[in-house]
Image: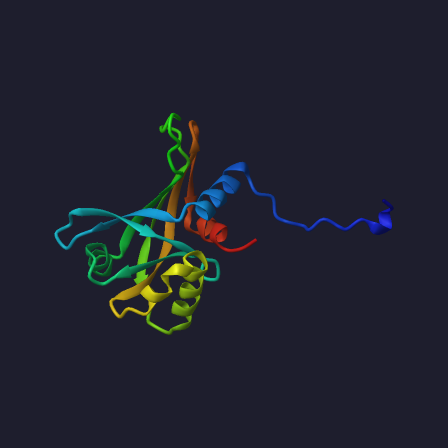
Length: 172
């Protein structure tokens, strides 16, 4: 091959091993544990499918207004989400890659630009959810992450601030 035939490599920003591991975790895991607080201040934990809205740099969930976690986050928008690699039978669980994401939840107004991009991101990940997006009691909620704690394995952990996690959620 001659120099004339070689293509120039794309200049991508350097990403640390932990950043690559976190991107992989968020790209491959589709469910999160959502922590909210009830009106009485009691913690409530539930499971939610999530997507990444790369335009907004946030996470998107699609929730029913009938669900306790939705009522909770509308009343107290500070939430926490845990995304974790699935357990493998026979393997130790203490070092499973995971990230705890603290953030603020906001219900998106139907047909607003933010709702449109959230819907697109969500259906890109969950195309089978189209019928659910047409139900009146379901809403898209954007979770803007304010801080995160990543554990990439035993002895490999770090904290991320809002800017770092928002940058990670946006495309390269």
